[in-house]
Structures are given as C-alpha cells and as structure tokens.
Length: 257
Image (cartoon, rainbow, N blue to C red):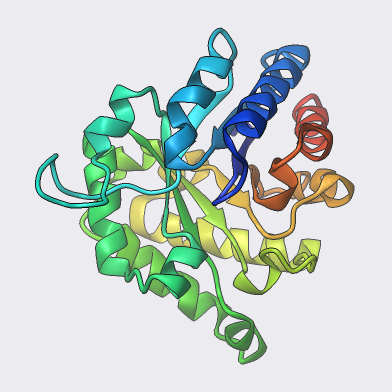
C-alpha cells in the first residue's frame, strides 16, 4: 500500500517570524498524528534554514521549491542540488505550473533538474497538469503524456522510487475551483497507466501521485480516499496551521482505514 504524503508549498509567502511559527505548528500537529502519514513543507529559499531549525526532532521533512541542474559554479541567482542537501532538504518541487507559465520552463529543462536531483538522492515532487482550455478541448491526457514523457525522459525505473508525481490542473490552482473526484481520479489513473506502460506495473503501483489544486479541509478526505490519489500538494491552505492541520488529519484518517 502506498503511504499517503501531504506537502505544503508555501510559494512566495510568509516572513521569517510567521514562517517559523507555521513550521512549529506543523511539527506539533505531526507529532500529534504520529507515524500515520508523510509530511513535508516547502518554504521560500531564504527561510529554509530557519524552518529546518523549527522542524528539528519532528518527522516533518523539508523541501525546496526549485533547483538548478548543474554543479555549484557561475550561475547567478541559482541554487544547486548539493546546496539543498547540505541544509537538510529531502524534497524539491519541479515542473510546477507557475514556473512553466510565468518563467517559461520547458519539459527539457525540468528533465535536467529531475535528473540532477535524483542523482544526488534528493526526492522530487514532479508537477504535471493541463490548462483550462486543454481540458475543455479534451486534451488533458495528451498534455499529461507530453509532460510525463518529457520530464522523465532517459530516466530508468530505479529513479522512480525517488519521484512523487503531483497532478495539478492549472485551472484549479488558487482559484477555489477543485477538480471533481471523477476528474481527479481519471487523471491520476491515466498517469498510473502511463507509468505502467513505460516502467511496468510493479513500478507504477509504487509511485505516489498527489493531487494539487485548491485542496482544503472540506475536500481533502474525499480526494485522498480515491484509489489513485496518494496525498496532496497543498498551496494556499498550507499557509496557516489552522487550515493545514485539518488536511493532515484527513490524510491520517484515510490512512487508518
């Protein structure tokens, strides 16, 4: 059985004080829940070390929101995988729709970053998802296949153990609109089917696929109860303990069944 995983993507939010307080609250909630689920938080780069200190002794893992694919060197403004590992990161988010849309990141670049991260044993939360016009035109599966094949190009099955895939329909991110359970399960089932064709059933069945797109307390349990949904990548609702804790509790409830 795949272990449920909930990751909070803080994006470009919080300040030093509020970030530390949030990390402390998540760590306390994780302790209360015990070993039921895996939890990670992904704060802005400038707060990674401070948040790590607040998570000390807890089971909450630290993640970054981006990395570069080359070894440390003359890359102004970038952060190497080795640097993230050095400060205690266990995960990095790659392929997020905001970086694809706002910064023009393409599948080829995302693939290089995934290869670099996995080569250093840094876990990857690999994001894929379609635009509203893609879904309306019936192109969801075509978009997902393109992003999956591009992002995972030339990576063998052994590497899949370090990768979690997050399906994030772009039309549902930060909009308050959530994919219906049928839409979410359909996309997740397609992703797992694609993995089966590429890597075989055993590997495909072991890969966790998270849902990301306006996840909140009142829909988290229904989403994570779906057969192919193995957790959530949470944006806005991860920015306060009051909103994030019920999502963690919902995941723990599903995991206990």
